[in-house]
Length: 559
Image (cartoon, rainbow, N blue to C red; front, side):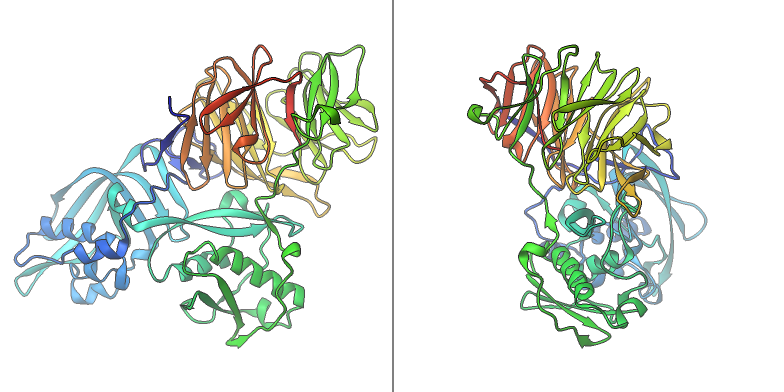
């Protein structure tokens, strides 16, 4: 049996569902989806695209026009041949891209007016934010044609590229923008989708200047001042060096060395995801900014690792080890006499722990070998820590609670997440950069996994969870955690099914593990540890789940 099943298609089941108007959809829009990484190149395909045939009918002109949308070269020069000469200069295809399934139908309305009926599976807006749909969304697109010199040409069309799934796979790829946590310690990825053409560096920088995707707004920082624009309309790349020339009051003031370093770092980390760019030349209003490059050890970390240390339970005693297999390093944290210890968690810096007791109705915090109760409720999720030392849990179904773990006496406080009302949360974990929460929840009908930005005050205290995006999946999740800065692992403890989903949309499905009861996540897939209902541990490997001989149960890594 294969260890993984790969899902790589722009289909009715998408990956990330973008919420609308602050509401949580039970079906519908999806923010990211699979990256097919077609071996065909857009430039090669462009050479095979043909312009309008002589004496083509209106139907043939419309269909030829949408087929030519895959030809991104020379600003869609082939597609513009289907347009009337005056209108060809007005048409603005960058506003959005529409991706459809099945063959569109064309019907004539009034003389010269035509309607293209499409079943949309995705939309990509001008910012590169992709929204796909659980169920194909019917839409009517209007065209006007005119007979010019004996040949039909389009005089009005949607300001859109209209592609079928195959064409989309050829022409588009995901690109990663980077923003930062409030301390500028960690880089936070924000995936966008663009046609992979010569001007893609310009597209990437343009949307970087506009700021993060909605679900990250307020949770991440940018080094680039608000109102900053490109001095010229392009970002030229020569000899793998991207030249970025910025203008605006925020950058045209006298920048400190730290400010200019952070701007250049953000541009470099973002543009280095392009295969054509290895470094960045930063200019302001045409003047090159000269500064020493930031030391590698001072750069915001991309995909920070998790410590190999583990916490677990052995004979109702809270135990730590420097690694799962290092029995010699085993240390006793707490051996309560009147409680049954379950579901422990360990702070990033270690030395502070949390666990559940009384049938998951109490949350306890352990510091300096002493335990104190934080929460008592009808139900509490497995706790988790962020790197700023806040311990997180959800009580009574949907109340998100946090407590600062670095000193005694701190009382739990609620984190606002009104959009969770009516749902029962079964899992909440925080990304290693501290800016995102991944949540598994359900209502009476469906199960969901959401990713939401964590909005904090000036002291780093969590205040609110931003309106989220939903992860689309083929399973009913009861657990979710970050496997890396750009991957989430989800699990259905009822069926033993798991999926690994990247934020660009690639989905992998490890084999089912019968009796799955718990998953803990360290750095990389080799540190995904599963526990079954009989407390047997398994490690995820390329060949599937491999049984481990170990005396610990309820294992967890830091975080």
